[in-house]
Image 1 (cartoon, rainbow, N blue to C red):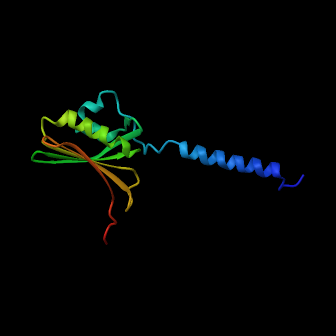
Image 2 (tube, rainbow, N blue to C red):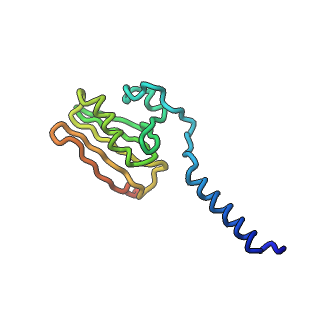
Image 3 (cartoon, rainbow, N blue to C red):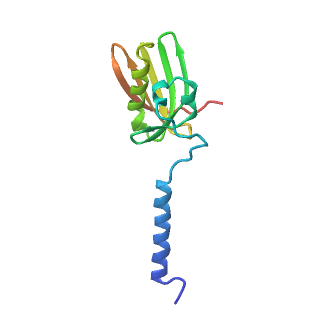
Length: 141
């Protein structure tokens, strides 16, 4: 039997396809960051929230940075799936609407690269929720 027999080629092709499918379903690296403990979502602006992965409908997410000025809160999160950005923003609004009149959540996937997609979800008292997607601009040297 030749090494190039149709049966052998079919087996090799099937193995390659199976490996490609398995790699697409492989979990993303946790970067040494544990899953959040129950109840951590109730204190999203506290330091422990920077040290764990939260669970969302389409994957997981984590808080990267947060900043506030006067009545505005701006939050940057890394999310496995940008479809979760709206739900993530609602978590921040539920916990912080009494302190802020504007909350903006920027969600992106990791690694961040020029041209990668970002979803911004903005909440204000008069307008409610507004979402927009854009591509991260290239850095100018």
